[in-house]
Every structure is written in structure tokens, then in C-alpha cells.
Length: 188
Length: 130
Image 1 (cartoon, one colour):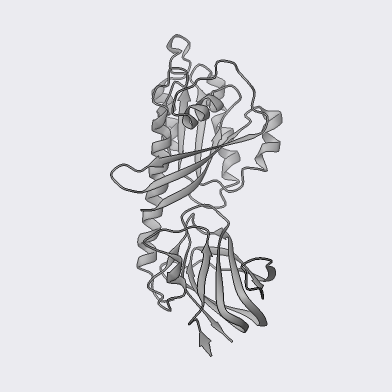
Image 2 (tube, each protein chain N blue to C red; image 1 turned 90 degrees about the vertical axis):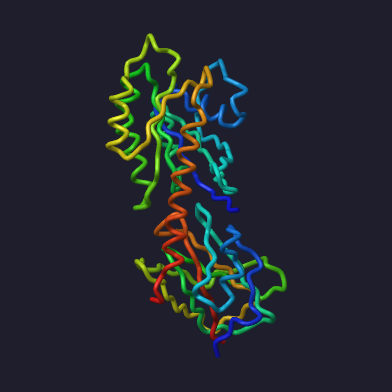
């Protein structure tokens, strides 16, 4: 049995639903915050994910950071070195999807050459009539950046676990890979 | 004299039960302690008595930046910095480090890994020259 620990950055434009998602992660989907409240700093949520068919787990330290541009800069200092990335956009806002490119560039500066597995999350899938970003387009962009794509509805609590499970599994794979290397090292 | 006998790890910031911190001081570089994610990571080694240490040798993997602190207290507290090292990356073989501590006196040595070349680092063997 092993418990891994990973720092996961939750990023994306303001009002795409990062905090709604992180609250659902935190209380296992029992609460959707109906009133919008702008995140002005960084909020930390811890979530433990069990890796299926093992006794192992990954503790995700999720940093929900302000998406609003004027506040994001100050928050960047608190990002540190991330282990994982969860990039969120609003399926009803083309602009929030376009800005994902900027978020990616920004986070890469913090990765210091480490491989940081990530997911792209299209949120607000319940608002299908107002959808501006097609799944195929988002999927293609995600693939080009090495991210796994998921669509969620924090409001309807649809599919919210999938991105976290995917992140935990990626981190677990990296751990297994390194452990394998460490077991077979030459003497120097 | 090379001696790691009697020295043992009293604290480690992470532990994988298949790769426990005891593997650091068992004298065997095939067994290792592995960190389980995020930095910094640290472990503290206690000597049976206060010892003058000239050199620490450490076999490791994926460590980028290491700080060493010491104390002469019977408790693992109140550490002061001794040295820090930037360690070169190796691929497929161990990082073999020989770190001079200039005969400093210590009851505990604290090793802090502040950065790695990967999310996970390992320490295979530590021994000290007195």
C-alpha cells in the first residue's frame, strides 16, 4: 500500500466553474454553490483518490486559484512546482476555451522540465443550448497538448469524478515507471 | 573509517511500505527509500552518539538540490545548516555523491531534498566517514 501526494493546479478563466468543481470534489457532490463568489486568492482542497484494483491511493492537493487576470498574477507566486494540471473552460464561452493556450504557456514556466500530466475540462455541459465549443474541437486541442479531455457539469454533478481519477492514474503511472527504473539502476 | 552502523533514520517525510526509510542505512545500495510525491522531502538520521563527520557519501537517484543540516542535541530539533549541493542528473545509474562536512559534530543529520529531476526521488545508501 502506498499513498502518493500530488499538487494539482486548477486553472482557467474566471467564472468557468473551477471553484464549483473543487467544492464538489471536496464534499463528494453533495453541494453545488448557487451563488457566484469570485475566488480572489488560492484555495486548497485535499481529495484522496483510490487507484482501482490496488490498495494504493493518491492524495491530490488541489489549488483552486483565481482566474481573473488582475488577481491571477499574484496567485502565480503560490503555484510552486505543480505535479498535475487541471485546466477548465466553459463550454458556453469560446473565449474561455481560446484562453486555455495562455494558461498552458503560463503553467509550463513553473514545471521546470518535469513531466506534468494534465486534463482539459469543459464545464457547464448542462447548458447544451448555449454551447459554443464542440467536443471534437476541444478533444483535438487537448490531444495536441498531451491532455486528456473530459466534459462535466458541476451543477448537475455529471462526470465530475472522471478528471480527478484520470489525474490520479497518470501520477500513479509516473510513480510506477520511476520505481521500475530505480529497481534496475547500475552502480554508477 | 566508513561507518553507517548504529546510525538510523528517525524521520522521513514520505514512506512507501515497499521502500521504507530503513533502506537508507542498511548498507545495501540495491534497496532504497523512495519519496511519494511533492517537494521538499526530508529525512533525519540519528547517530548513537555525537560524532565528528568528515564526509557523507550518498547513493541516490533524481535528486537535483540537497540541503544538509545538523544538530548536537539528543532530540531531532533545532537544526543548523551545514551545506547544500546541486547534484547532476544521471540516467540509468546511481548518483554517487561525496559531500564534505569538514569534521562537523553531529548527533543528527537532516537531509532536505528541495528539488528533483522527477516527481519521485530515491536514496539507496548513506554512509559517513568520521
